[in-house]
Length: 396
Image: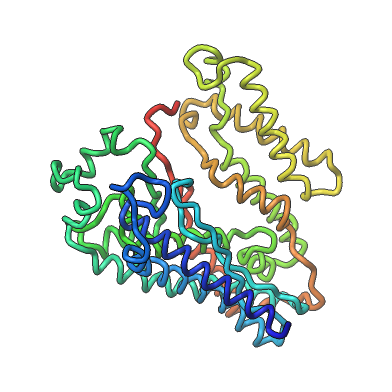
């Protein structure tokens, strides 16, 4: 069929627009379209349209990111597809429902040089980042009245303007609540741009669609700028330092990322408290989960070297290092962020941590080098080690 690919791309975009609009309406109202009692039920189409306040800016940022890649690839006459949007609507089945897994383009032509990889890689994050800044600035400078939150959570009204500190202590309100972590850029907007009298706490940001869209955009920008493999950050770093250095640096960053993501899952304190007040009920319980974790890391590290012994050594080294580090009192209470583990698996098992070779392996000019190191600053500004935290009053 002629235009079959374009029809599929158009349908995926329309479905993604619908799912992100549904997700936006649910986030704004703390209600749902499906599987909830009537008092918490949204109705289609009446409640649907308000979700455009989230879906349009969020998909706008995502689209600018993807077309940054697309137009740069076309500039170099490299064959590439239009974006394929990926809809995903989880509704009440997930603490975070944004209606999409993002979008991808397929570059089917050959990229011949470090410069081309660099330009294509950096164009997407820069384009999306600039638009995200505009969305965040507008969102933080056009916050609704303080009482807006009471229309969503009427129970908060009894606490007045002190509700953030009051409800934080009450399990009825906070157990299972999602709290967003701050990155440096988000802190800047909160401290120097927003009106502090109107600023919502981080556990209510999802009800403010422009800020929620901007926050998610910064989060995905940071993920894309990780200097690993064939992520955008990997293309940028490869262009900056070349194949030899990249093949040393990328695995080191990957292993360090794995170390942080899983840190705190298994501790010396857990071993001491097995079967008593600890999280694990028996030694077999503890070591079963520990073995599963080692096997998971082994899978993630399996493509670092052709020698499979390397992946076992790295996995065991990470686990032993994590355990030993929890023996030091000053760092024993620090937690990694296990939410990064699926991303770690995706990188290690499917995307890979190395970069394709190029025909023309020439260093970048000074302007591109400067732009490349600027992208590292953008990564630091956008990245938060704890992007999404769910409050659990029963947790260890």
